[in-house]
Image (cartoon, rainbow, N blue to C red; front, side):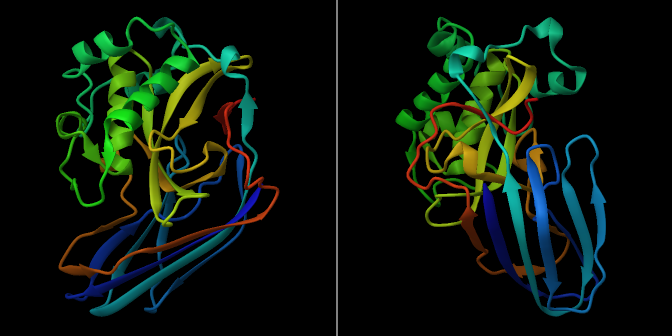
Length: 285
């Protein structure tokens, strides 16, 4: 499946030399190939780039001049997701989890899984372990939360969301991740360009570490049900423990923000009428 993704970001910079770190470039990883890409800046700047080897997260840093700054990024990306029958996907015992995966069972800044453990055990602890238990968690989040833009902010945590019973994609993902971690299922936050998302925007979903026929892999889930799991293009710092590690822009200074413009277009190979019911991963062999 091939997609074209675009984003246009506008800022008004108050002080010359203000540093920005952007995380908007599509990841280069197994199952996701960047065919071509282009970055343009309205100011004459030379960005410095860095990629985290363990995650594939791509960063670029600039020091902006005073005045208007526009950042435009576009890419053509091929997705090759692996789809597996849900019955063949199980939870991996704690003693066999890879060391780099274990950290995603711990609480983090916005995901107080330790405080939600009793609730998670009561609601989901009796369910058979496996892919369908994670689906049940996502179904519960979808059915018990109202999707209300503007109802949360950058300080809202998973516990807050459980109490308020409303939020946006970030909050839906945080709560589903919290329930998974409370049950010992590794889970992490993913930011993506999302096919079929309306209105288009950067979208937050989650991945849970489960075991398929070929071994462990990160499987995609969207608790909002607003996007198809097989049409998610991970962006730059698209993977983290929670939203604190997945900001698409981090300026340090006096900056006025414009509304981001995000677009994704299916070029070929995407069945626009099909809803995915299989387990979807970009990392399985």
